[in-house]
Length: 82
Image (cartoon, rainbow, N blue to C red; front, side):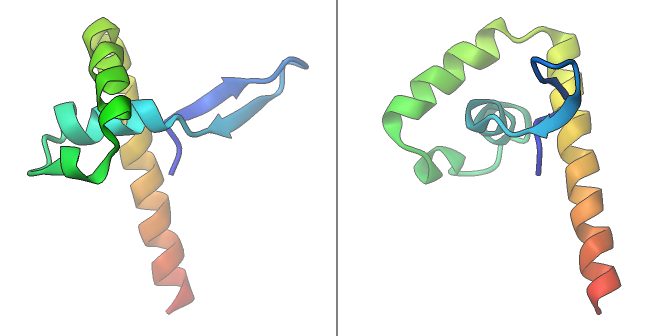
């Protein structure tokens, strides 16, 4: 699963990238999974809170879309393996 589907490398090539802080922000503040905070270290939760506070609405939408795309790809791959 990736949080950034268009990460730009120094040579201008796009790649997939995973940012734990963004994923944690999605899990705790957007998805609002019950007791999600228990799955992360305390220091990371404070960084996650700050990340979410400064994240624009467009950024939240992009993050949600990227995670949904990643999950749908994982489901497709699992179905193909059966």
